[in-house]
Structures are given as C-alpha cells and as structure tokens.
Amino acid sequence: MRYRVRHATSYRYAETVDLACHLLHLSPRALPEQRVLAAHITAAPEPSRVVTREDYFGNTVGWLFLDRPHAQFAVTLAAEVEVAPAPAPPAAATPPWETVVATAMRSEAAEFAFASPMAPAEAAAGSYAAASFPPGRPVLAGLLDLTRRIHQDFAYRPGATSVATPVARVLSERAGVCQDFAHLMIAALRAFGLPARYVSGYVRTRPPPGGAARRGADASHAWVGCWLGAEHGWIGLDPTNDLVVQDEHVVLGWGRDFGDVSPLRGIILGGGTHGVSVAVELEPV
Image (cartoon, rainbow, N blue to C red; front, side, top):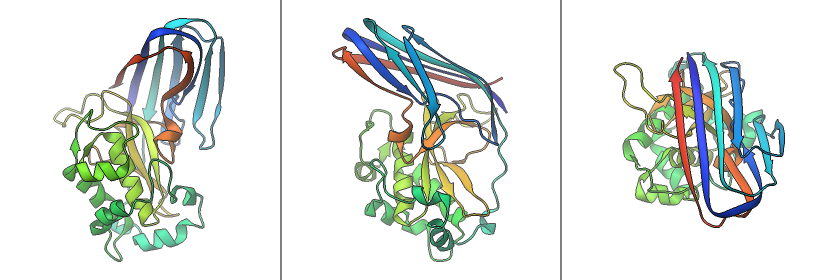
C-alpha cells in the first residue's frame, strides 16, 4: 500500500521569540517493510541552520535553529511511503511468554524490557495484564488478548489526559488517547519482563471501504512494538484500534516511550504563552 503523508504543526506565540532550537522526529523510517519514496520537511520562518543525524535507536532526527525574531512557527512534513508488512505468525506458533522473558536478556530486545520515565514497570499495570498471560500461553495469544482488552475497557477521550499523564492515572480513570494506551500496554508488558517499545507514526486517515473509522487518525499516532522471541522478532499492535499493525500504519520511529520520539519539541527564548495546531493526513495514493 502506498500512502501520501502530510503532517503540519503550527505555533502562534503571544510575544516575539528571539531565538529557538527545535528537535524533530518527523522523518518516516526506512525499514524492510516500509520504503520511503520521498520525504521533505519545510519550516517557516526558514531556519538559519539545519542538522540531521540518527539517534540512538536509529531514527532520523533533525535540529532546526532559528536566530531571527518571529511570532509564529510552522513545520510541515510531506512524504510518500510504501508499506508491505509480512503477515503475522499464527499465535499458536509463537513460544510461551515465559520462554520469551527467559531469552530476552540475551537479545538486543533486552533494553526495551526495563522501565522508562513514561512507561514504568507499574505493578498495577501488571496486575491488569495478568489475565492475558496465564502460565504457558503463547506470547502472541496473550498480546492479542491484552490489545483487545485495552481497546474494550478504556474509553478513547481526547482531552482527558496530557503528555505528562502517568500510567497509574490512566488505569484509574479508564480513559485517554493513543499515547496513554501505548504507555499502559508497554508498562504492563515490562512488569512481566516482556520487551516492548513505543512506536510513533500515523494511522490511515480514511478506513478501507466498509471499515470502521480509526481512532487517532487526526494527529500523530502511537502503538506498541512487541517482541515475540528470536525466531519471530517484533510485531506491531495498536491497542487504540485493536489492530495488528499491517498496511494501515506508517512508522516514524521508536523508543522506550514518547519522550524518546516526540515529533516536535524545542527550546525558545521569549514567546510567552502559545497556541498550537496539528493536522495529519495519511491517504492512499
């Protein structure tokens, strides 16, 4: 499936910004199952300097430096991406989850089994997930069940949480958005010792004919990368929409949690209060 991506973010400041430096995770990631055909990032005002490199996790990162006064700032990604993921293995063919835990520390996935600031190994999250992981259950069967339960038990409610909302509050209020559900699922899996990573990207804006509208399609989206063991590797699961990630998602990057792959963050001198607007489109070509 080939998609055209447009992600526009704009800031309007109450006071003039004299200097600014912005960190961007806005470049789609080249992967065996995802081919980046074109990608271009524009900014207004035009930066005086741009630096691009890969971060620790292999994501493309950009720094934009602005050294002239401005009252507004806008960044737009325009890209064309082709996704062709391999089918997920049969759940019954994956190893027991205990086997995955036992082998994780001897793999490159080990770094995603530990707590991180926004996805701690929350005991309450582990207790919630326990019903999905009885002894000996194939790991993918447990992951699919947990994905379904989060989708079923938690209300998708924009505005109910913020970027800083902890997993414990999401658990108690049973509401949030895609970022919250991804952090909840990651925290639950880490409580068991299962590696899980936060994936940032986009979900198809308009569903296939006859399909349900996807939650989180009007902004950048988040889901969970889950490790199935050395034989099967990683699989993407979207608890917001109860989906195995196949051809409706485009990956920007991944990390331990949102803090590692925030699409846009910065440091500014001046500005006062500000307003921000975000618009995302991911449409088939």
